[in-house]
Length: 228
Ligand SMILES: Nc1ncnc2c1ncn2[C@@H]1O[C@H](COP(=O)(O)OP(=O)(O)OP(=O)(O)O)[C@@H](O)[C@H]1O
Ligand SMILES: Cc1cn([C@H]2C[C@H](O)[C@@H](COP(=O)(O)O)O2)c(=O)[nH]c1=O
Image (cartoon, rainbow, N blue to C red; front, side, top):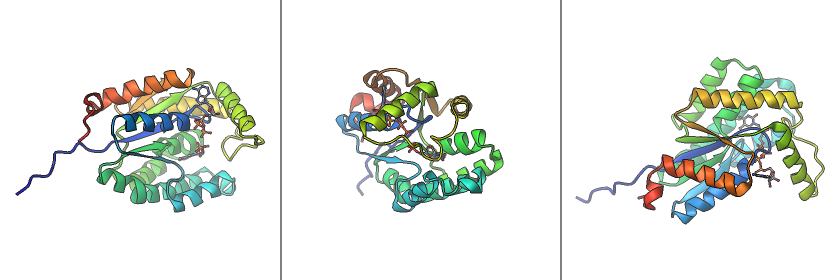
């Protein structure tokens, strides 16, 4: 009988942090680096990643759930995550494709839980149900002063020719974003085996190199170039 090839497991990596710290930019750069190492990977985001989860994303970010309160919003984010895990994350990992997500469960804990005041017991229960064991292998937490990050977001709007109106959370005051930053650092400290905090106040190429050092250090198969 033929033996199944001894394939290494596909990895699940998430990026977390406040608004405009450079998550999407670095997710794209990591995908390119993985491709250079012949790693098959998909890029996704939260809330979103599947048609149903994207519909929930639009609903929340347009502010339509704001009046319902942070607890109801946590449930909506978890509903989106449940579909994302079942339809995209789990199937890709099962077939050996790495998954790189721009935000995941730590955003619910940081935004709705620690910053929004939702009880830990609800956040824990939603996380257990939605993840169904699919905890990330590595979480990169990009950290920077939110005032500096806002300047980047303003610049992005100018470059895109858009008016900076701000979505549901971008509209919060600066001190709210300062608390959010502290809360992401707190989550990272409490999950030190999974989370690595990296300063996002460096240029894109340097930040990319710092992230690659962490990723390739964590997953030795990337150093040999052999992922199977
Ligand atoms: N290291 C960097 N230095 C300076 N500008 C950057 C850096 N990384 C990204 N930017 C710029 O900052 C803006 C925000 O970047 P990006 O969209 O990647 O952040 P984000 O964390 O995904 O944002 P959001 O939370 O709004 O989704 C973009 O205009 C991007 O070009
Ligand atoms: C997953 C998740 C996200 N959020 C917030 C964080 C951001 O303000 C938006 C997503 O927009 P982005 O431009 O894609 O970063 O949603 C949240 O509050 N809770 C969550 O679980």
